[in-house]
Length: 212
Ligand SMILES: [Zn+2]
Image (cartoon, rainbow, N blue to C red; front, side, top):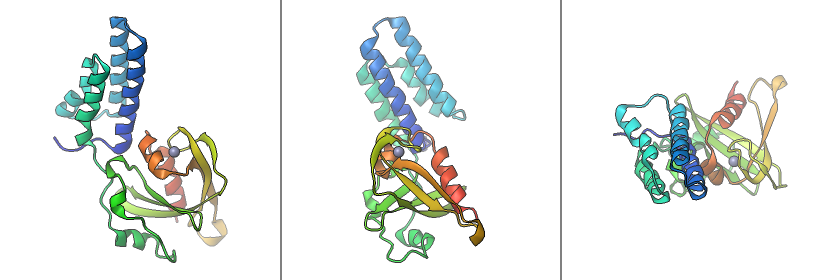
């Protein structure tokens, strides 16, 4: 079986597993435990409606989990099937930011590709946040600016309570139509990638900036 789980889908499943762990710890009635297992499986299949028989067999095993250890084993079993962020070279990244002088690209081996939905890093000296994203098979690069004031709050991208700041970027449309768009997002994009369970917000943000 090939890799098929996108990193954000894995995050979604991991959240379901964590929820089940809490429920297992609190609930001992076998019928209720059964119901919560089935509910978790249903949510996973709602997220992944197009599965092969093998993929479905793998994921459906969450219904058989009886203990917390089984749940951990389940996560271990599905991890090899994560489809990592597509490979990209540093020179390709530099091409995406041709207009940026002195672009600092972190060493690419420092990223966890199996846990990357959008590639992003900060340039703390200039308060810039860079984004690289495969949009419909084409690479896009977006340069954003962040506010120095970091606060606690809900990130627009991963919806977790974390250290966030306002990140803005300006659209690339013709000069008179430039528009600045912003979201409060995790300052730490690696943490955001570990938490994101739906790529819609980041994808819409990057698409709107990119549109010419
Ligand atoms: Zn986030």
